[in-house]
Image 1: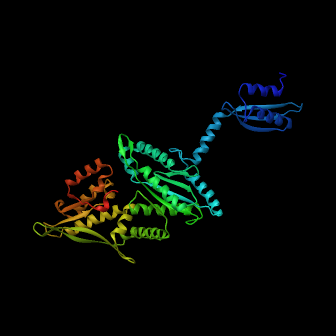
Image 2: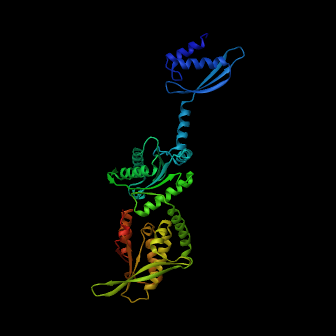
Image 3: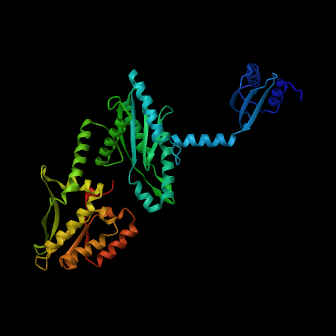
Length: 415
C-alpha cells in the first residue's frame, strides 16, 4: 500500500515481466495510459512469454483499478485455430483458402504489368502407396514431398496443399514462362529422388500443369481450372513432366466432358456393338478363337474410337457396367460357335479392383450356357501394380472358372 505506480512498473522490469521492446518504452506507455484516466482494455505479451489481458478502470476519487487475466493458453489455442484456418494440418503448408488469397493478391499486382505462374501438381500413382503400405506411410510420404517442394522455391513463392496428393505453387517472376519451366523441372527432379519408406525404396513421380497470369486468366477459379486442364494434359502425355496451358486444351476438356455424358446414355440406348477378331494358331494355320472388340456407334459422332472412350469409361467407373455387358454379350454369341472355338474378352484393371468380377464371369457363363473352357480372360500386366496379393488370389479363383492369358501392351506399361 502506498507504492507509486512507477515503482510497480520498475519492479516488473526488474523481475523481467514487462511488455514492449524496451523497459523504458513499457514504463512510458503505461504511465501515459493511466494519465488519460479513460477506461480501456489491452492484451500484452510479456517478456517471459505469458499473455495477459489488462482492463483499466478510472475511479471517482482520482485513483484507478486494473484487472490482470492470464490468457496464455487461450491465446495459444486461438493462434492454433487461426493457423489451421489457413494451413494444412498434416504438412503445415498453406491450404486452398490461403492459396486463393495469395493468388488474388498477386492478381492485383498484375495491374502494374507484373506476372506470376500458378503450378498445380499431382503425385503419380500415390494411391498405390496408400493401398500397399497404408495411410500412415502415405502421410509420411506427403510430408517428405512437401519438404522437397519447399526446397525448390524461393522466399516470395508459396507452396500449398490442396488436398490428398494435390499441391500448388504460386511462383512470382518477371520471366514467368521460362522461370516456371525451370521450377517445374526442379520439382520433378526433386520429387523423383528415391525415398526410403517403411524399409522400401519408393520412386515417386509428379505431374505439373502451369498457367501464367494475367495471360491465362484474371481470377483464381479460372486460373485453377486451366492449371488442372494443363495437368490433365501432362498425364495424357505420359506423366512425370510438366505442361503449360494452351487454349486448345479447354475445347478438349469440354469435348471430353460431353463424351462422358453421352457415354452414360450409350449402354441404355444400345449403342455398343462387339466385333470379333480371329485368333489364328500359326502352327496349324487354323482359327482357334475370336477376340471380342468393343465399338461405339454414336448417333451424331459416328464410330467413336476405343482410344477416345475407354479411358473416359475407366476414369468415370462406367467401364464396370460396360465390361459386364461385354462379358454377357460375348458369351451369348460364342455359345453358337463350333465347340473348338474360344472367345477372348479383355478385362480392364478397373474391373479387377471390383470384388464382384468373379461373380460376373460366373453369371455370364451360366446365363449363356458357354462352357468355361471356351472363355479366355485377357489381362494386362498393369493389374498387378495395385494390391498384388488380392489380384493373385482373384486370378487363382478365375483359373478354376475360365482361362486367362497375359496381354502385354506398351500402352499399359507404367511410366
